[in-house]
Length: 276
Ligand SMILES: C[S@@+](CC[C@H](N)C(=O)[O-])C[C@H]1O[C@@H](n2cnc3c(N)ncnc32)[C@H](O)[C@@H]1O
Image (cartoon, rainbow, N blue to C red; front, side):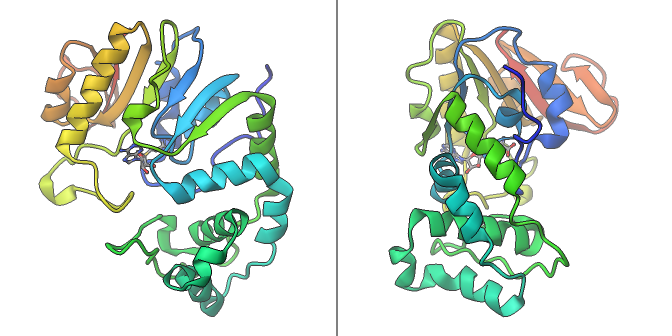
C-alpha cells in the first residue's frame, strides 16, 4: 500500500515520538503480521508506518474517543470544529464544560471536537487533568492555532477505514492478548523518571509506577516467548537497563546512537530495546 503523507499526528502529546522517528524507523522489523501499539498517544509511529493490520490502544478515554469519532464521522467532526473560536473567554467556557452536568449530555463527536480544540489552543498543548479529572490548562494565547486540520483528519479517517484497524481503550496488558508469531508490538509507555523530582504524572489521573514498569517487562518477556517481535522505548535509567539486560539495548544520546556497552559519550537520554 502507498503511504499517505496526510496521515500524521494531529494532537500535541506528551512523549510524542516525532523527534525520535529516524531512530525508531531503523529498529522496525522488515516484515511483520499485525501491528500492536498499546500506548498509542498521538500516534507518531502508527501514522508513520500505516500498517494494514493494527490494534491500537491508550488508557486515555478522551484521546481514544477522538480516534473513534474520526473513524466514524470525520466530516461531522470537521464541521463541529468550525464552530470554535480562539478567544480567551470562549476557551474557558469550553474548557470548564467538564465541571458541569451538560458535559454528560454532550455527544462523543462534541467531546472529540472539544479535546482537539483545547489541545490546540491551550498553553503548551498538554493534555493535563487535575486530581478530580478536570482539564485545567490555561489559555495559550496563540495567534493562529490550527484546530481544523481537515487534510489530516480526512487522511486519518481514510487510513482507519481502508485498513483493518482496531481501537481499544484499556490497560496495556490486555491489548496484545491475541498477538502471536511474527506480529510486531511497539511499546511506548510513560517514561521511568530520571530522578524522583522529574516524575511526570500528567497523562492520566494515576501515574505510571515502577510496578507498572515491571508489569510491562513481564509482558515483554511473555510476548518474546510467544514469538512476537517487540520494541520498547523508555528513558535510559539503570532501573530500565537492568530490567531488560537480556535483550538488545540501543541508547539514543544527543551525540547519536551508541551501544549500551559503549562509552559515555554525550548526554545519555533514551533507550530503544528489541528482542530481535
Ligand atoms: C509516551 S506516551 C505515548 C506517546 C506516543 N508514542 C506518541 O508518539 O504520541 C504514553 C501513553 O501511555 C498512555 N498510558 C498510560 N498508562 C497506560 C496504561 N496503563 N495502559 C495503556 N496506556 C497507558 C498515556 O495515556 C499516554 O498516551
